[in-house]
Every structure is written in C-alpha cells, then in structure tokens.
Length: 168
Image (cartoon, rainbow, N blue to C red; front, side, top):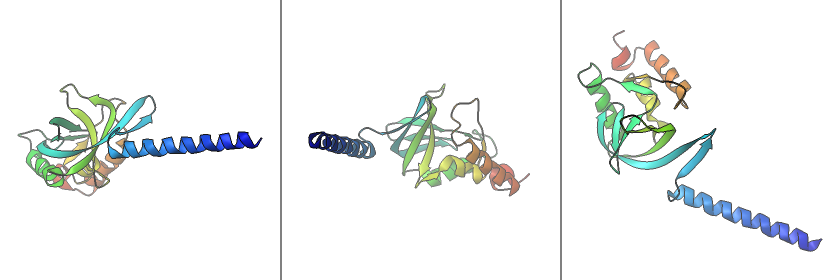
C-alpha cells in the first residue's frame, strides 16, 4: 500500500514539473501561446510595429502585413483616412504589441488577420471607440471581440466622437 502511495506522489510531482516547464516555454515565446477555442486555434505573439499602412493595416517585425480584425477604416482619398492613419501611428509605431489571431489566419491579400493589444488594451476596439473606424464583421469567423467592438461603435455614435461620427 505504501509503495502505491509513493508511486502516485511521484506521478503527481512529475506532472507538475512537466506543466511548469511547458508554461515557462510557452510564456517565453519559444513555443508561442496557443489557446484552443472550439475547433480553431487562437495564437498570440509579440511583435514590433514597424510601419503604418492605414488605419486598419500595419507592418510588424518580420515584414508581415497585419489587418486589424473587426474594424474598417477609410481608404486613401476618403475623409477619415489621414486622421485614422495618424492615430494608429501615434498609438503603435515602434511599439511592442501582442497579436492575437482569429479563426482565419490570413485574408485574400495574404495579410495576417489579428487583434492587436498594447499594454493589455485592444487597439481594434480603441480605434472604433475613438471614432476613427467602424465595426465590420463578415460571416461567423473572427468574431471573438464582436460585442466589444460593436459597443465601442455605439458609444462613438451616441457621443458623436471622432472623424466618423462628429459630423452626424
């Protein structure tokens, strides 16, 4: 009986050691932080924003283009293009951010589809709340923060905030 208890104790300690090692590797960025949600995988990674394309697209270290999920900002030549681009530049350029994937990894233009976090703040939500962009969701994919983004849009509309809503 005593031998069985010792064996169980050793097994528990071994499992705890494996769990501890895995978490340290995952949090160090060696393995990345992967959280399984439903049948898709959500991946987070740290990157530095190296260039701003427009209000909803940036380039990160490694040279990859990143399209912010759940939002849509004006394109070049439209009324709010420059102000949205300047705002995201002010927020993100040169800063280390967390990229969180949605259910789809890339769009038709091969851009990474991501939610961007800076100091634990969802920048996608912030851009909509400040009235630089609108909420935009297509289909059922990549909707993890749909509620927060739509609430941010309602806040901006009701309070007539930013380029998108201050004139309405």
